Length: 76
Image 1 (tube, helix red, strand yellow):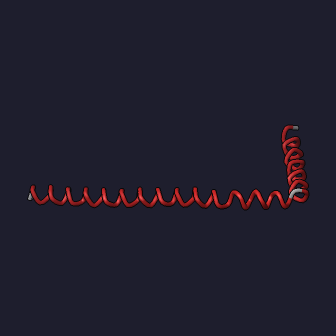
Image 2 (spheres, rainbow, N blue to C red; image 1 turned 120 degrees about the horizontal axis):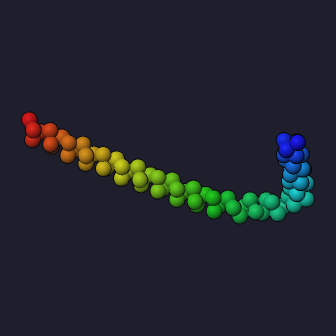
Image 3 (cartoon, one colour; image 1 turned 90 degrees about the horizontal axis):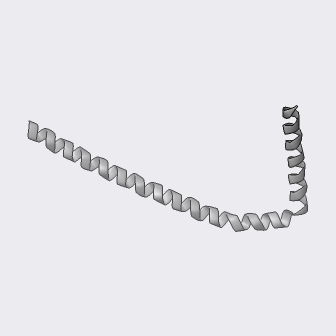
């Protein structure tokens, strides 16, 4: 019985959503236009932070390689 209620609830939600989009299409587009720049800014910031973190990791790996090479040369 619970599965049937879940399916019926999903169908009702879809119908209400489609009806709402049809009735308030202009408002939906305005909201979409308002959120896209903010999403782009946040996505850009995340990409920037990821790139900086990757550069830091690469620099740290080079330092460790150099340190290991110097230690191995001292042992030899």
